Image 1: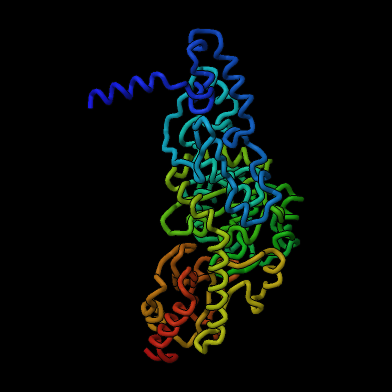
Image 2: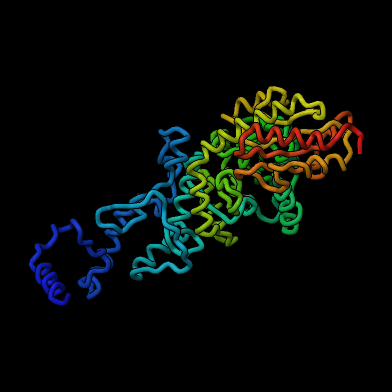
Length: 470
């Protein structure tokens, strides 16, 4: 064995060296010994920086424009890919997905590199783990492309995204306008947090006209917060009319676009910031808490600074999982849409049901606005039972379901059911109860076979029993 080893060593010493640059990795310019010995560091850093100005992590503008010519599914599948930034391989071999960068401290090869990062901190690429890594940069760029924003920020939850967006534009003594149909935690933030710091909130009817909204704008109004469709009740804003008035009065428009990422693009209709609770459809598997904010060029810096000061970054593993879910968003949304419409139409024919509230159905009061603004629908909708069923019967209906789990949130692969009292989270226009309208039940239609879901609902109706029967 020893003789064989010696023979191999001898042969290897006679083997010709590889072609220059083919297999041997060239040293990084700022790590060469001559530069460390003196003089060359400043020029090396300058050379490095000038060569990387277009790198994704270095750009603070134009990220959402990088795939403008492509259609939605291509943007979803390929947006944010930076293969050259995910490898140190000398031949440029890389990975389809970014590595998971777990970092707090970012190291700098020299004081020149540190000063370069501090020139426009934290907008100049890597600086500290809380402000972003290549994993989060990829997700941010993908979302900016999807929403048509100039750039984007990722945070630790959808609610953190809402909070950061509003706080970016208000100070003590300011006023904001918020749709009466918003996600209830948004209302809680306005009523319980902002109020403590002297920011007042006025809620308005989600069906307000532009003129009505204009009458509600005050001299100190800084933000118009929209959510379309409304949470739980699914009213559709006349988005263009509202944003036009807000922009004329120099009011920043923030839109919660969680309902259907890719189905509606608020920034094309006048929003400055588009928010998504990526916990839901973007992640798609009910195992991540994360939020995203796409921003126009004139609002990105204020939003990014708000995120920095609040200290609410998303973890690298959550960013990776959200980006993985992002890649299948288009095909999953189509499956959710088709199954949800099938179930909604089936419910329309049930004797127990007073109405189905789904914006893609012609029976929806704002169906014409849905047709104007949306390219599709998601798996989320509500229906109301007739007012002849007791609360105990409603509970029996929900408890009897096998494939629909009882739970908050939505947007994962699983189907969910949740009774909801919409009027309890409204202050301007109460939801209709009585006169034939009973309990409201929200459904999220997942990725199960739709025939199995309908059979599950059928059994639950049978278990619920006849009207008024305990």
